Length: 433
Ligand code: GLC
Image 1 (cartoon, rainbow, N blue to C red):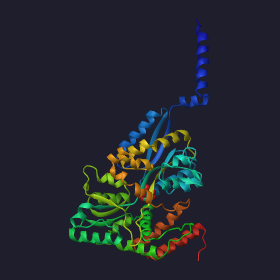
Image 2: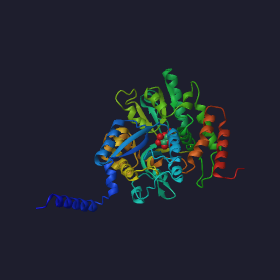
Image 3: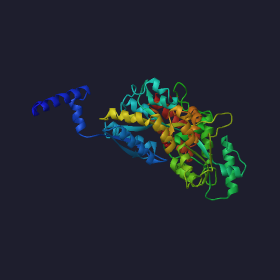
Image 4: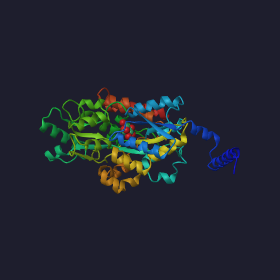
């Protein structure tokens, strides 16, 4: 029999051996003794069913002992979130580990050295399962700095009951939309009812709305070589059309020039608009019990000008890891979990967030629970990205005040486009004639 001391020594040796076999060096053990790692995950407002999202985070904690997740919500506007990150990351902040990034920022952040290189986590073979547009936006100089989380694309929502009442078809062209709105507003004589609401406030959403109209007239911001081609007859015609929709008693109320996604979503959701441009997230909210428009809404692609195709802006959010994070490995585990097929399926069903994985659009469980989402596959495949460039946020900052000035009527559209193009050329170092 072992004496007490020999027993303790033997136990220590065995424990040490087990420790070695498990690859558990002293430093790591010390870390474990300090308690669990708390990951800070920053993201925008979760619409739909935020409780379901919380449940997913708790499930992650349950399957990853030693990791706790504290999620922190930022304001819903993309511009405000961008501002928050720029300030923090420029200062090398390690206050957050995982961050959700608008598709349009990844290049800028990667170039600045603020994001962890995720190429080993997201190799080409893994990328093939995702839609190509957001994957492209996650790469910078061939390396991956984010993994696509959910997708967005612009859509036209319409009041099916009102169009049916006046035997009108959902519009295909912009002039169909204007004519239908004028008919319904005239006949309904409802002072609360508006025609077409969209996002015309001076912010990123304005760029999406204006570009969709410009693209649907055949205009472009940059050509395939990256040269600025924004100003031109097609762009002028499209921006003038959009401006002329706005006015008291016209197709779009003046409030659109200060409206964002939620302002218009609420107005349409209260039954006070015939048409609305918005992202897919609004659908789930309209179908909720108690919604004034439940069962009365339809969606179609956005209208276009004659001879051109309809265009939806590609939006969406990606997940990246702060390069200054003290817990990059744990953050990677959370990132992989949140972009996994299972979590994306649950998010699609519960919160109406659209998966970035193509196969989920063929998934029977998703199709049964959320046929609307399953039907968006083609829209996402054809949606158009805003210019993919580390300079995009600066291009947007140039276009925003110019588009806004044209829409509120303080600058002729042609002048606004010309001024925007000139500043963009300066920024990109193009010769200016
Ligand atoms: C949505 C889109 C995002 C876009 C933003 C504009 O959040 O997903 O890509 O930039 O709206 O408001």
